[in-house]
Image 1 (cartoon, chains in turn yellow, blue):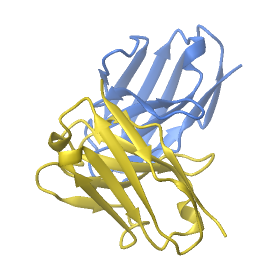
Image 2 (spheres, rainbow over the protein chains, first blue to last red):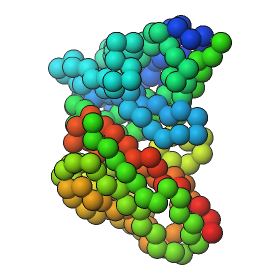
Image 3 (cartoon, each protein chain N blue to C red):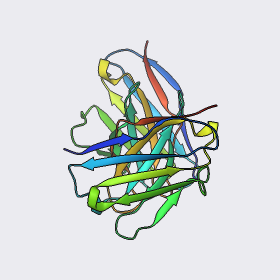
Length: 121
Length: 106
């Protein structure tokens, strides 16, 4: 059974940093692209970033480019999101999601339960 | 970026109804489209991929169709468990989602 378990969310001041983690199990982690998708309170879904399998290529939404860094540790089956220079508009539930294939050109077949990030003074 | 526009934003229906949600892409995405169901406080759940392929374990009352720029999600015989918000998502390029359609009880 595929499981994705996010952690690391919390309250942070504007301009601060936070690192999210996603522990994966139930599939061969290194063979699949992985993403972060966020959802501001009461709003819709927004793709944040994807890390391809194999090639190591990474992709970011314009709204986070230069501030967020996605990484993965295949030996630990773990995905990360380092978030710097956080803004109020980054407040959201952050979901870790597995893609069905090895690159961003695919759909999300499994999602974690999400972790809430609140940026406020 | 490819913009995805869903309609309606809210849909009121009764148990047993057939409902249809539409999703329009701002450019041709062939059949690179997925549909998700989300309930309050829960993660999205994949229903349909490649516009019309039913994800394993999803009831057959859910169906998807379309190609190019116009797509539909249909639910035939709405069940109490189906009252939720539905999102379309294109994966022809960097992923983008529709704004969501809330299916509520009439």
